Amino acid sequence: MTKADIVDVIASGTGLTKVETEAVVDGFIQTVITSLRDGKNIEIRGFGSFKVKKRKGRIARNPRTGDQVQVDEHYVPIFKVSKDLKVQVNENLKRTLG
Image 1: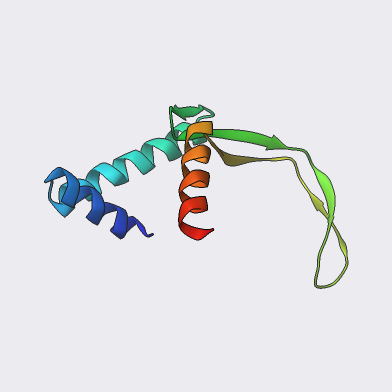
Image 2: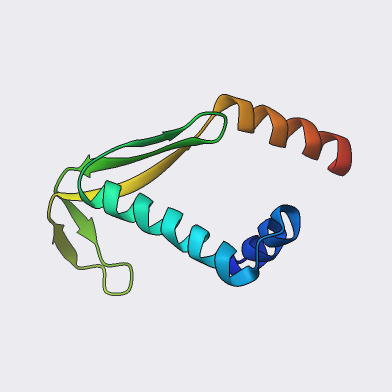
């Protein structure tokens, strides 16, 4: 599913125009990006949480050449799925797929 698909689904469900819905979706995405960039966590109950995690520096290996490469310490955004969402996805896919 793409951002355009999400906009279509929300627009048809809310009665907003696609332009208005796209502005809301873009605003949400930009808010998440800005918050994570500023080191803030975001928690959406029933959905999950966005956080920034610090990764230690380490020695890695270039898979093409086999050479060792120093990877500096850095920060990465992560998303942790809520327990409720995990249960819903699992139960639905068990019924429909297997």
